[in-house]
Image (cartoon, rainbow, N blue to C red; front, side, top):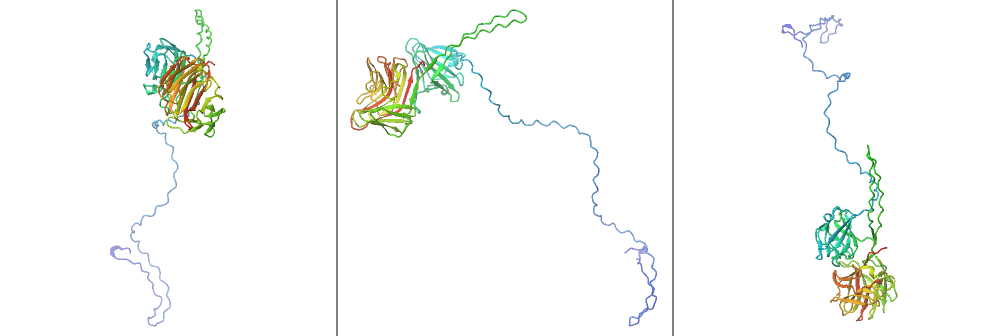
Length: 487
C-alpha cells in the first residue's frame, strides 16, 4: 500500500450519501433506494515500485549484409615434395638381334710336364689364354698325361672347345675327372653314368684331334661336357685389303673398303651314342624267350632276343639303391640252354664297325657264379663269331677279357671270379687299334694284337652249365659310344 507524507496511510474512500431512510434490522421495512453520490477525487500517485525481472531475449535479428572482400594474404611456404610414385610396368622385350658371324680364336698349350704328367686343380684358364672368350678353341700338345680336376671359369655362361692337337714323346691321354679336387664350383660332371651312381666314370681323350666342348653354368655352378650330335667350327675368313689413301687436300677422300674374305669351310663331327636304364619294359612280364627271334622293347629302344636249346624268359625287377631299373634274364632248367639279347632283329645284325666304336659299358650281376657262363660285348655272331670284343665269365674260371679276329684270339685272365654283386664292365678304344678293359673303373687289360675292324653287334648272353635249376643274370645299365664320324 503506498505511504503518504507524514507517515499516515491514505486510503481512497468512496462516500455514498443515503437518499432515504434505512429500515431496521429487525423486521423494519426498507426504504426506497437513493441515487449514487458523485465520484471522489483521485488520490496522489504512489512511489515507483521496484524494477521487474529481465524479460526473455527477443528473437535474433536478420543477418547483416556480406562485408567487402579483404585483400589477398601473403603466399604460404612451399609444401614438402610428395612421395615417389610406384614404378611403371616393365617395357616389352626388344627384338632379338641378328646372329653375329662365327669367329673363334685358337690358343695352343704344350702340357704334360715332359712325361712326368701334369694335373690342373683350380686352373686359371684366363691367365693361360689371355683374352679368351666364349666359343674359342684351346688346342693342347701333350708331352705327358694331363689330368683336369677343376678350372676357374673366365665368366658365368662361358664355354669353349678343348682337345688334343698332337702328342710328343709318348702315347699320352687327357682325363677330365668327375667331381675332382679343388673348389667345388670349379669342378666337372662327366656323362655316361647311371643315375645315383656313386662312382661315375672320368672323361678320357687319347687320340689325335680328339675334341669336346666344355661349358660353365652359373646357375648350377659346375662345368659340363658337351655330347652333341654335331658341331660346326668355321675358320676365320681372310682380312680384306686396306683401302687406298685419299689424295691430300682440304679433306682427303676416304679409301675404298677392302673386300670381305671368303668364309672358311665348316668342319662337321658326329658321335653316335645310346644308353638303356631298363627302367621301363613294354607289355606284361615275365615274357618267354623262345628259340625264334623275338623283340624286347624298353623305354630307350628295342632289343632282339633268342633262346638256344630251350626257352628262357625275361622280366622286370624292382630297383634297389644305386640301381634304378633292372631286367632279369632267366635260362630254362635244361643243362646247356642259353638266352641272349642283342641290338637289332637278329644275332648277326651287325651295325657298327670294330674300328668305329669308342666305348661300351654295362652294369650287371650274375646270381650264380659257379654253374653258368655269362658274356657281354660285341660279336659278329654270338656263340660262333670270328670278330669279337667281350668280357667272359665261365663256370669254374676267372673273369676274362677277350678280343678276337680271324687271325686269332688275345685273352687276359683277371685272376678273380665275377662274384654275385653288381659290377661295372667297360671296354674303351680311345685310340683305334688299342682296347682297354675296365672293371669298376680299374684298368685290367690292354689289347692291341687282336683288335677286330669288321662289323659287329652289341649283346648279352647267359648259358647254364650244370644242375637242374634255372639260372639268372641281372642287367641294370648298358651304353654305347662311337668314334667321331664324318657324315
